[in-house]
Length: 151
Image 1 (tube, rainbow, N blue to C red):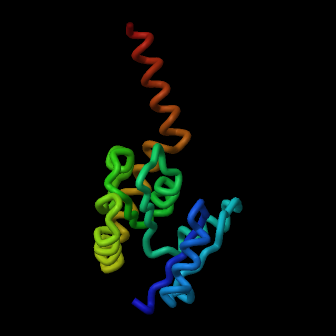
Image 2: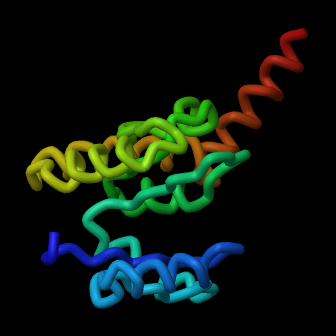
């Protein structure tokens, strides 16, 4: 789709190869590599201009990117890893390692209506507030203390 732009934030061991591949495929005008981003405001801007956020990891212990995308209320496309299934609300999963599955899932998410994206985003924001905010951590800690006192 010539109207889409892929914004790649971050880097990694294979980023040079990915940049070269985008040139070889003649899509380098549609794929923008911004590299690592330490500026939290700029990072939030990247999330907020996105139509969706994809985390196509093959292995993940915990994905801060997924949580940040959820906090911004963005539709999230993630591989079908257990960590995502256990921690991520409202994400759309694709088969890990399958380029075809990722492509089909991205098409599906990008074709959602504004209302559907808003519903997903609101669910994700609430999940982040409940599970990952300071208040959420305090509530969990209080529950632990209450259980200890009862014993």
